[in-house]
Image (tube, rainbow, N blue to C red; front, side):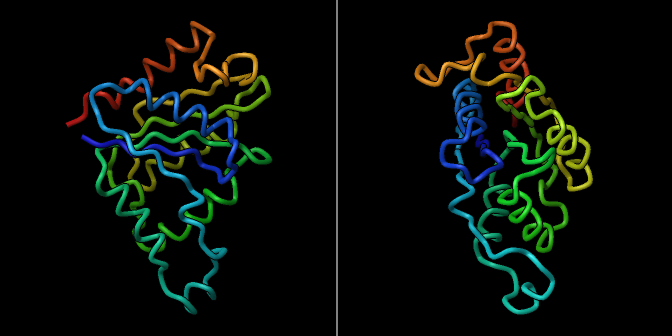
Length: 177
């Protein structure tokens, strides 16, 4: 069984990347491949660009990663209350190739931010929209005040109650068939 995991951002030092890597480490019964959106950098999506170049191979490759997985773990960074451009762009390209982007895969959706809301706006958008693109959301969780609750040196969530909630959320991906 294979899970793909990624932070929905292209920031190399993303706190959501730290969160998704830690969350992936909690999975014991599956193989996890952590993707980096920087490896799927595409031209800005637009209909004119699509007509000009067709469907880029990197978008097809990203969809193949989803197809080859048993489940998906995503940590969403929030930019101005919504998705990052890096995530939205690859998502838009992929949805033009396969409208059912998430291909009926079980998903756990996370978010975090330095603030007390933990990226809840983008997480709510992701949870609400995933089913329209054949995503089966099994759990979601926002981690507030990242720098207060996560030890970046030890790479652990140090807030016991949040850690328990995170373990419960990701456990939905630990026994997939």
